[in-house]
Image (cartoon, rainbow over all chains, first blue to last red; front, side):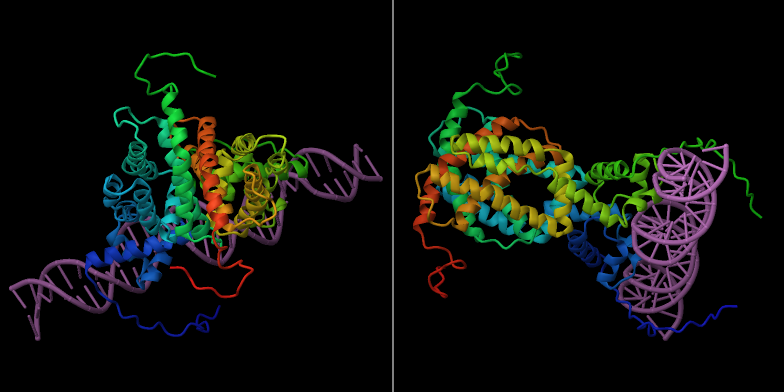
Length: 240
Length: 240
DNA sequence: AAGAATAATTATCGTTCGATAATTAAAAAG
DNA sequence: CTTTTTAATTATCGAACGATAATTATTCTT
C-alpha cells in the first residue's frame, strides 16, 4: 500500500484570482501573444505554453478559437494583412519625388515594418509550412510594389510607358528586394552583428542597383520577348 | 465486461523479413532519409516516420544515434560540410578569367548546389532553430566567397589591393548574394512558377550589380571609415 | 438583492512523441 | 555444425500534445 500523501514540494496553489475581460480584448490578447510565441518557436508551440503566457488555462483558448489552426490563421492575418500599408504603393507612384528618393523612402519604411523578429520569423515559418498565404503575399508584393517600382524606374529613364513590363525586368527588382530582405534575416533571424547600419545598406544597395539597372533594362527591351507571355506567335524557335 | 477479441481489420503482420546490413551503410541510410524527411516537415518530424521510410522499426535509430539531436547534427554536417566545394574559392581567385565570368561561373555552380528543396529548406529550418551552425555557415560564406569576390572586383576596377576591405563593400556583395538566394527560395520553397530561368536571372542580376557597383565602391572608399573598426581615434562625433 | 448569462476553471480523453529494456534472429567465428 | 556476436525486433514508459465535457465563479440583467 503506497503512501498517498506525497510530500508536497509545490506550495499551495495561489488561489488564482480569475480575471474576466471582454471577449474581443481576450481574442486580441490571444492573437498578440500567439504572434510572439509562434515567432519564437514556430507553429509547433504548445497551446499550454500560450495559455501560461496569458495567465489563463489552456482550454480557454478553445472558447475563442475552434482549433489551433484557426488561431494560426488569425496570426497570419495579423502579420500579412494588418501590417500592410496601402500608402507604400501610393508613395512609389508619386512622380513629384525623384525615383531614387521614392525607392529609398519605401524601403526605409518597409524594412522598418518587417525587420522585427515577429514578422520575419513568422514569414519564414509560414513559408516553410507551404501554406497558400505566403504565395499570396509574394504575389501582392509583386503587383503592389515591384511592378510599380519597375514601371516608375523605366519612366524615369525616359522609356515609354506603353510597352508592357517584361518578366526579366520584374525579376531584376526581385533581386533588389531579396538582397534587402536577406539583410534583415541575417540581422534579426540569425542574430548576426551587422557591420553596416540599415540606412547605409539601403542607400548603397539602391544606388548600386539604379546605377546598373538602366543598361540591363535596355538590353532586355531590345531582346526578343520571352516564350510564355509572347503576344506574337504561339510557337517560336527557342534560342539556346 | 468488454469484449476483448476486437475484430481484427488489419491482416496478419507480413512476417517482415528483417534485413541486416552493414552498420556504416545503415548509418548513411539514416542520415540520407533524415535529410529528406526533415527538409519536408522540419526537425519536429517523428522518429517513427523516419523509421517507416527506411522499412525498419523506430528503436533501431537509437542503435546508431544516442539521441535525435545527434541525428540532426549529422544532417547539418551533410548539408553544410559535405556539400561545400573548396574549388569555389579557387575559381573566384583565378585572375586568368574576367571578373564577370568568374562571378557568373561561381553562382551558376553554387545555385546548382543549393537550389534544391533539401538544401534550402534545411538551411531555413536550421536558421530558425537558432543553432550556431547557421551563423558559422554565414561567416564561412563571407570569408571564403564574398570577401574574395569583393577584393577581386575591386582589383578588376583598378583599385590597389593594399587598402583593407570596408564593411560597406562586403555588405554590397551580401546584397547580391541575398538577391540570388531569394530567387531560389521563391522557386523551390514557395513553389512559385518563375517567369525567368535561373541562368537569365543570374546574368541580369550580376550585370546590373557589376555595372553599378564601381561608383558606389568609389564613394565608400572616399568616405570616412566607419566607426567600430576605425584605426584613427577611439571616439568620433556621430554624423546624424 | 436574486437570478440569468457566460467567462473561466478543473478534470480528463486519446494520440503521439523520444527513449529504454528485454527479446529474437541473422551473420560471423570456432 | 555449434557457438558467439550483434543487428534488428517487440513491448513499454512517462511526458506533452490538441481537444472536449462538466463545473465554478464572475459579471450583467431585472
